[in-house]
Image 1: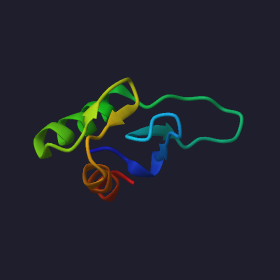
Image 2: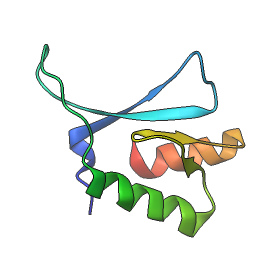
Image 3: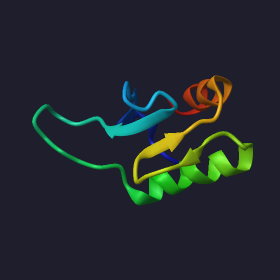
Image 4: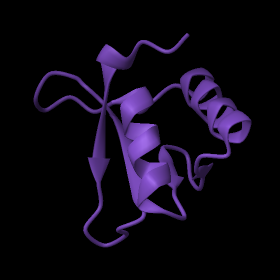
Length: 75
């Protein structure tokens, strides 16, 4: 199970149908989401027909309803 307190979801103004996972860390420190965690999220997306993983840490949604369902589960 993914520890959602380690991540926050951010929306992109350049890509309105995408959400990105960011690791919550101390200011000035860089980290990326673990592949294991992103695979759990990707599996959930496939199982529920809700969005698709488009890059390492970004997920694409066809409808606003999909994005809302995703946020309710992972945010």
